[in-house]
Length: 166
Image 1 (cartoon, rainbow, N blue to C red):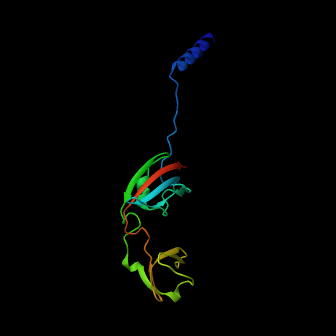
Image 2 (cartoon, helix red, strand yellow):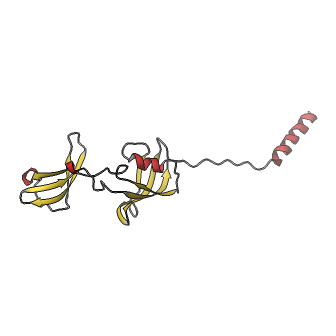
Image 3 (cartoon, rainbow, N blue to C red):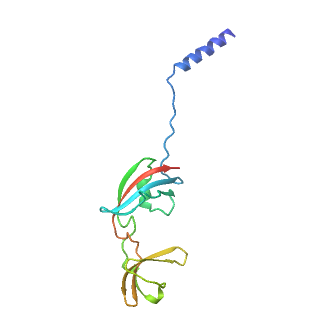
């Protein structure tokens, strides 16, 4: 019995002499299946085209098809607090401008009301998704509509700050 007590005391003394052990949990990083919250600013040159600064940050499931693949590629592996700036060309971002996406329509085929150059019209595609067109010209009863994405053909710089990875 006395021998067992000495062995136990020896083990306690040995363990207490070890350096204090601490364990750190790795910060969560972007990856498939993670929900991400971030702020971003998209610029063309110095012109701010879109931003969440002063607004609600975006939140999305990483890897979903809603986000541009090139955007996701650039932010993959980031963690909360990380910031990054990257450039996306037209082919990586909003596509090249498509001249066939500019159409002239009779005014009578459009919703009633006043139209002005620069106005954005919204309609539903056959599958129910929204389709946007910008009025780029009005000539009598003919209206020119541009169905290109407003940022099509532009190289954009993106500033990102990761707020949270869940």
